Image: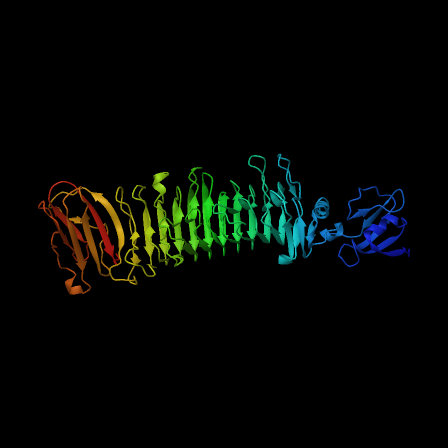
Length: 543
């Protein structure tokens, strides 16, 4: 058996004076025990470039000392100290340049701009390369003063894995750029696990353009420093494929997506903006989402790019409006084709916000909004605006939903007066636990041309369950100034009664009569001339 002489030295600098033969045990990079040491063997035939971590020159004119190590490269092998004060940029960049997987051992590494992977922006084929893994919160890349752009740049890298470390912008710059400029390629199948981006400056914390079919798992992006109302926590502007977010949190800034499909599971954050012309499906499961401070919405489309969402599905998610503005909404922007909500809660933060589930400003952008909305076992606390008075017709269904307590001023608006009525499916919406008995929800509010003397049903379907009230109010200047109210009694013996109500302000001789027959919808008729605009309001009724 051959034997090899093993020499023990203190630092890698001592390799330069060591005779080129045998093997060497190095106790440290700068000093013994700093994690940069290791075992080296002399290769007299090697002429690889000295890289300051894996290969070193010895005292001989030819040959190299080669580090005996496989697998991930520890940044300490290249001289990184991680003491939070030493500039470790060059040392870590040398480790990145090996094109091997990187181990970011515990420490705070003060750095400038780092480049990992191919990092091309000119359309060069992306690499399906190694990744970077740290020790969780104990491993931190921190921007040194004067750094601009992003701390970690891994552009044009596909199959990339980033796991368990912190990127601290230090109030100087953004955190991570794993994107690829539009039209030049796609950074596909990337995966990011337990990554923290914090204290970033500028408009964006993490840029992930064209990261198609990529996943964010357990990632946290904290608000910018200083605070910026229109800041972007993560930009997943992908245009295609699917992007998934699992147990992710973004504080104080919005998340931007542009893809075919996006999935959110057990996530929390301050708003999601949808770019692009068409997003097929957004799905939410057990999330906790707040409205964005800048937009006043939780999920919204980008009006400038004429984007729209084909479908939203949500299960067990808490949708929260914050702020005191009246334009706070859950869903808003340009266009949503459909919403399917089961087991969700739509609430306010209790600090004066007065939110809506669907934004009623959408008609200013497109004249279209939700074509269908289904709510099952859902609790509503804020004002619910299903459609805008100027927007198109839709269908809304409510099954076993409750309001969770409402104030008199907080009405649930369902429908629009200028086009068609909203259709309600069986079981309806229960408002029996409203804060006061006078709380109402507006079934629809529309313009009708009525012929005097003809009975008309208030609703298309018979109202056979529960008790309630129906109001019909004409609008000033558009017909007879009339007001009528019909109350359905709870007792079965009174269910067949016809009620003729007293007119109010019927100076022109017009009159509204109303009746409620068992098994039928409430009916009304108008005795008068001209057109009449009616507002029909229902309280606590089912079909």
